[in-house]
Length: 124
Image: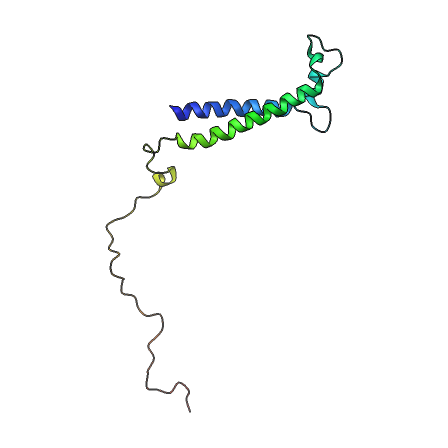
């Protein structure tokens, strides 16, 4: 339950962070200058100024990023570890055969042919 709530909060914060980052000005003027400092905007938006909007967006990015990272770390502690016994890969794998006896090695023929100990290796 708590893990699900944390994941939902992380998703909302990630969506908000994408919006805030896209609103910030880049190399050009960006959307923040168009919203706050755009000439003749109605509704008092030009009273705030482009500089204050950029400061607000910068601080909002910092706060959202901090919340995002903190919740990601905390989500690790909220995972219900008792319900998970094996990974999906382990569940799909073939069952282990426990009927084999691994105690004694099997009899295998030697890799090299037997050599005669008394003979001279070089003919005369």
